[in-house]
Image (cartoon, rainbow, N blue to C red):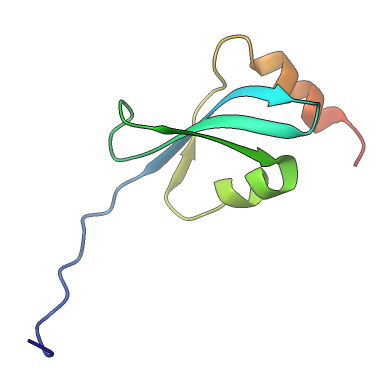
Length: 79
């Protein structure tokens, strides 16, 4: 019915784990909501990735093995 209450979903954290850097400016990462075993692979420019990670409820996990140095280098570069 029109006046039925809307069921609220329980709060679920979203997780982000960087898996690589492409062409020195694109961030590859896995994104999941609620279940870390079920994720999607995404790629975004650094500025869009930073904005994406600032969304409420988003937890940024340590980078995947082998991606940490590339991530550190990306953030040290002048914009």
